[in-house]
Image 1 (spheres, helix red, strand yellow):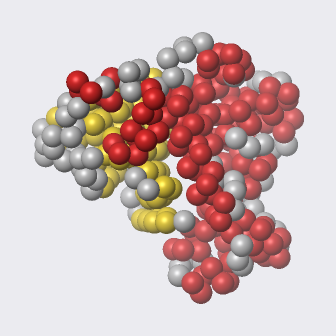
Image 2: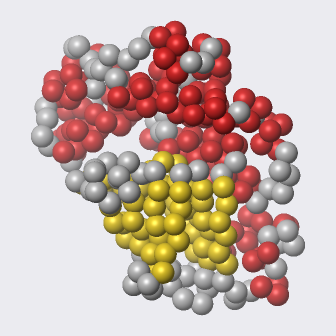
Length: 295
């Protein structure tokens, strides 16, 4: 899979080319100050930007105007008349997922639905479009599944490509009742907030995470709802999610060159390097030592 990952002081950016004409960007800001992100993309692409955490602004015409995007919201941009390179400002703690699809690819996906998608209509060819939209529960679920890479890298491209197509289908779906029918748990916004809090707790305490019972009590939700809701929102059980998060952190720490294998193991909550090495190999198909040698 074509993946470019850049871990620097201002945050992390991942660039996934999941199919011809389809690019996924994962952009985070892990520092206290704003982060500025730039990405060149030609005018033949439709841009979808989803803010999963924090807030951001997309800047255009040398920052003369901007589109703010808050947590839980998205924007779609398409301007065949001029280039729209991505220039974004992310506040501290923000997480943004962007999907860039060529108009040719998009036509191939939705040719039969052209009458329902305004900018695909024959009379709108050449026109520019901008759309703000709040993310419904089902779209939030798919986005969180895309963010959490719980699969082996060898199969992740196929998984991510399928999720992009699912995301587009949901985005342009006109049945407003679909979210409620397919995901009744997520209709209650209080439940979503509790599940997100549970996620933040296990991440902040990944070295000594709470038991599921203690976690459920802390976020004031039943154990059953915690298990069901967490899997619906993040696409994995609590501990599978945590394991994946630990592996991603360990990979970044190794890539930094500042820590050896034993030190990384301790930092992500493993008491012995052997258990960490086995988990890392199962996740990435290689040992931490071999991964370091490949950098």
